[in-house]
View: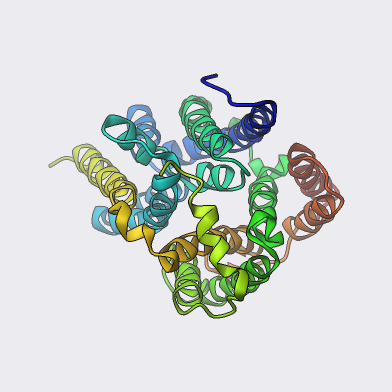
Length: 253
Length: 106
């Protein structure tokens, strides 16, 4: 790995890479079910592989083949994929200043900006570990997601439901583990932790209440709306809230 | 146009939309983010999105609220986190809980 400034930094980077690899394996395996589902929905193997290579956003991909498989219009499939992918814009806003890359690296960073890479990146205590966590998770999932998409597309349904192996519970458990330090406040202070906890609870309730009544993708986006209101108005922000912007300054000045 | 070509067209268009959305976030001018309110909001948005994903992935299937093996699995994960278990232990414990409960017929 590149330049390392001290033993503590080194430990942080190592821990980030370990998390990245666990998340990559758990997420990558899920692509088997995507590959199988896409072929069952009537796509051929190159089309299935192209979705994982080019779209590379799990939620969008599952929704896209689901709509085409149900005989839906291409326009509806495109719109839903976009709706589910919209939260990646918000992740990009968060990650760009922490990564500090430009040119083709920025395009590459954008392509691997997904739930998992953002979650692992923002869970790290130092900026070196943040970068290592983001890139190792993004690239690790990209490689495994595409490999296992092919496996699933070629094997079809023979591997069965990933739920049998509990993989559908691994994803939310991983996200909970990654958001956990933010909810404690960590370096940002106790008040910031309380604000984050309240925001998380309200955001989750909003998403759950909206799930039965609005199109897929909107409930989670609405949860972001809660955070925008809280963050912008400073609701629940105490005297320590200024330190939050200090945490944002972990990226290169 | 054949259905096969239509599918390809939809794949390329939807992929372009998804990539453009990802890139859009990365192209937000840095001085916009210098405002502490924006920095605080961007951090909170990530927390809210991930928390909502935890809820949606644990408690919903399609458009329905569902209580199944994922719920006890997530409780096991939360317990492991409270005990400061390592990340991989948290994830494996949750998956194993769901797998065992499903094998038992839940």
